[in-house]
Length: 506
Image (cartoon, rainbow, N blue to C red; front, side, top):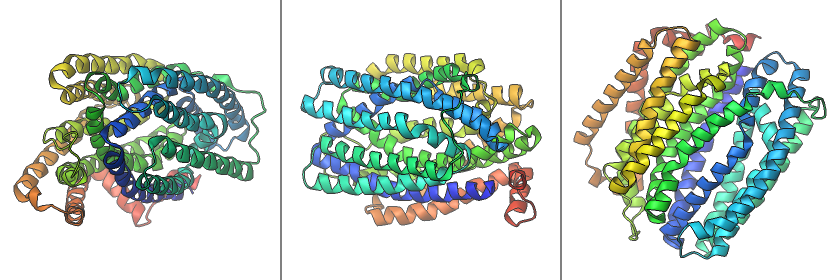
C-alpha cells in the first residue's frame, strides 16, 4: 500500500507540476505586460514578507510530522489523537496572532516600499493574501500534516491542482479584462476557502476515529521551539535576497530576480514533489528499522542527485532563449542576463542536492542539536549579501546565498554521515564531484552544439528541450547507477517484481 501511495504521490505530483507550469508561465507575463514590472515585483515582495509571518507557526508542523511517523507506522490511533490534539490547539492560537500580524503588515508596508501603486491596492493585496493562511491555521493545516505522514499527499496534490488551475484561469481572464492585482487576490482567496471546506469534509468522512478533544500530548511536539529556530534561519536565508533587493535596488530588480526564481523554482518544485512522494515511507522506516532505512537512504541520495543535476542542466541550457521570448516587448527592465542563470543554478544544485542529508536530520529529530548551524548559514547569507549588493546588485545577493549554501550543505553531509548514519562521507562527496563534472561537460557540449538564436519560438524550445532532456536525464541516471551499483540492482529487482518494499509487507 505504501509503495502504491508513493507512486501516486510522484505521478499526480508531476502531472500537477506540468499543469501549473503551463498556467504559471502565462500569468507573470500578463501581469508584467498589463500591469507593469512594478506590480509583478510588488507581488513577489508581499509574498516574501508574508512568508516571514509564518515564523508564528513556531515549528509546529515539522515537529508534528516527526512525532507522527512512529504512531502512524504502528497504526496507533490513540497516540495520533493526542499529538493531533496538541497541534490543533497550537495552530488555533497561531491563527489569531497571524491575523493580527497581517493587519499590522498591511498598515506598515505602503510606507516602507516606494511604489506608484495606490496604498489601498497594496493593503488589499496583503490582507487577502494573509487571510488564506489564516484559514489554513484554523481549519486545515493539522489535517494536511496527518495526510502527508500517511502518504496521501497525492490527494492534496490533486485538490491543489484543481484549485490552482481554476484560479489561474480566472486570473488570466481578469487580467485580460483589465482587473487590478487586488481583484486577482480576492478570487484566489475564494478558491482557498473552497479548498479548506473540501479537506475538512474529507477528514470527517475518512478519519472518523480522529478525536481532537482528547488530552493534548505537548511533549510529543516539544521540539517545536528548536524547529522554530531552524525555520527562522531558513526563512531569513530564503527571503533575504528579495527583501534586500526591494530596499536597495527597487521593485524592478525584484521582478527580474523573481522571474528567474519562478522558472528555476518550477524545476525545484518538480524535484521536491518526487522526493516528497517517498519521504513518508523513509520517515516511517527510520523510526522502525535503521538497517532498512540505510538501504533506502542510499537509493534516495544517488538518484536525487541524478535528478537534480540533470533537470537543472536542461533548465540552464534553455532558460535564456525562453526568457528572450517571454519578455519580448517589455522595455522597463532588462530580464536577459548571461551570468544570472549560472549563479541561480549553483544555489539550486547546492540546495536540492543535499535533500538526503537534510531529511535524515529531520527524521532523527536533531533540530536542537543543529540549530546553531542553521543560524550560521543565515548569518553568512545576510552578511555577504549586504556587503556585496551595493557593488554588484542582484549578483551580490546571489553571492551571499551561494556562500551560505556551500557552508551548510557540507555541514549537513558531514553531520548526517558521521553522527547519524555512522559512516564516512567519502561516497557522498564522490557522487557530488562526478555529477558536477558531468554537468560541466554537458554544458560545454551544449554551448558548442546549440545556436540559441535559432530557438526563436516556443515550439522550437519545447522540442529541443524535450530531446535534450531525455539524453541528459539518461546520462545522469546511468552514471548514478554505475557509481552505486547496489542501489541500481535493488531498484531493478523492485521494478521487475523480484522484491517488494519492506514497508509494503507490514
